[in-house]
Image (cartoon, rainbow, N blue to C red; front, side, top):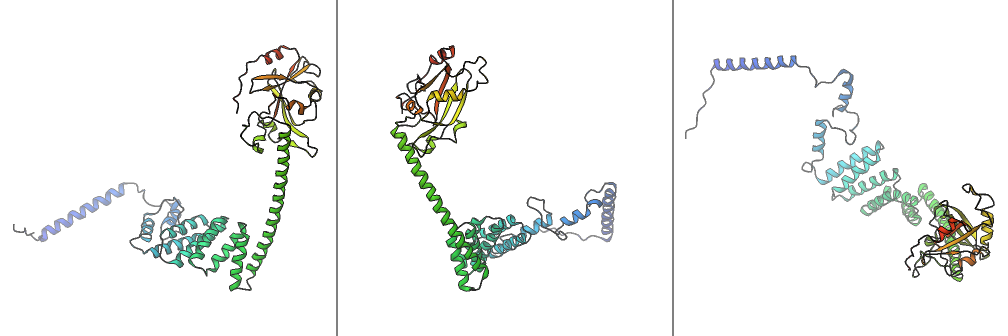
Length: 392
């Protein structure tokens, strides 16, 4: 098929087209003049808008801040992997991180150095610098463990990296790795025998190490003493054949299991004094009033009568009729395993009561129930339905 040949425009046609274009431009300009212009910079914000323009901005945009289209395009070009080698990209992230370091924006600096390391450049020295600089940023944020790890990475890549070795020595001291600190200082002094900072840091680390060792010996002595005391307590409980309804027979008695479950007593577990006397946490419950009194340190040598006389030397605030007084009270304990209550002989000592076959320590504490003798409250308490506990 023959190709169609376009005829050249005549002079008259060119003049007509030019006139048409002029008319259309005039119409467009006229339409703009009739509209309100909203895309410019208001007088009260022109400086703010100028600062956003990439050519005039005085500081970089904050993370999450909307970017000027030109700046966004420049950034994409800057970090485009097709426009940069891995080494160039890692270098640019390092330069960005250095900029944030200078402005003390250490978290942003860490992000930049991390991005540079993700590039996995083949340049070991560049990667060492990224690790070292990130170590410095972590150090200023007092993230000493992270800083130490980065300093070590830098030294692996560049064994003669003096800055990384000094940072590692500082972080080792802060993390109480005193031997490592001394070793790093020794390495620094091998090359710089007169380095006063390294000498001072080494001496400080040696002093701190001695203090830590002394403190550890003290803690060890305390732990040994506590273990000895706890073993004496266990021996005393075994000798007295104390029974616990919430500790299985096949489980060891531990400090945690002896800790009282009742909040007012939780800081006062059973203890053994130098005279081999047990002191117990105890709760005295009043079924009539649904509240309890607590004895945080009840000696096993006192009688229940002594307890009653002491506790009721003054009338209970809720005892309007004066029924709760020495000589008019009966005390019980409950055997939850057998679903039974036992009346206590008030002349017995706490130790004698605990050695009775039916008495069990509950939740690390001694639990007693106090009722007026011969009262309706006592009758209801005795005949209250009880369900036995499962035996361990």
